[in-house]
Image (cartoon, rainbow, N blue to C red; front, top):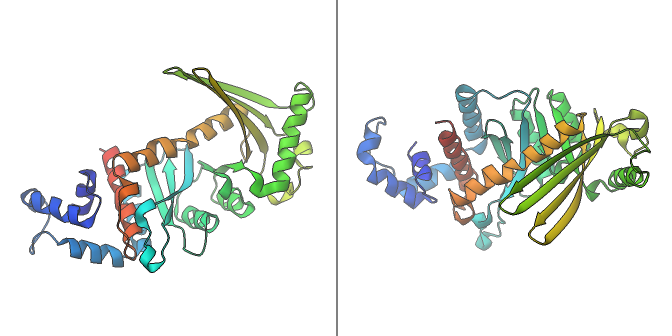
Length: 317
């Protein structure tokens, strides 16, 4: 509790947490038993360096289930973030990568897991999914999570998926690109499709998002590797046009999804960006995550968990 309150107040290391505890000692005494006073910064460091992150996460998940109710049908965005200052060059340790699950409608973190040193997010994502209750939700993941096993795991959890498709799935990516290129060349007469559009205008910036989707199984079954994707019902292309003053840009993004309907898919993809705008931005700007130098043993992962608990605590007020 002392650590969480200190982090909410701006602490980003064990020394500052201990100092905050000393400064607020009388207040903490009103609801905590502190027979030996406020723990020293060395004690905080030692405890959180040794604390099993899996047990800490289990406690976090139990707390979240007790204090919040997941809004059904919402987007759960899963993404990874490097903790930039968590490296230890002296010991040859690189910065750690944390994969988080963000409930876009609740605006809460549901869980997080550290990517193993000799692995990557492809193995961390299924591990995170296994501990989450996501029935009826839509799971969105960037291209690194566009894997047949991850899609199957999501369906087995009774959820839907929207997975960004890039050249890490090279043959399928090429086929989907060609499919929409043919559709465009035919002036949108070659295949049956669905379409949705959204427009945002703010502070001299104009963004246009257009989404085309193809869900005809007779067309999709010709995509290379289609049969390996559980409940793959739709492929989509989202064209993002940005106008900032006289500057213009245009980008096409492709997705595989178990959903149907361009409007719903466009909404899901746009909701996914909330993990950048609402979670990562807050962790960096309000909690100085990228400046945190906690590095010892399990300390970086557990400090990340404390930040997520602090963020959720503020949001749940």
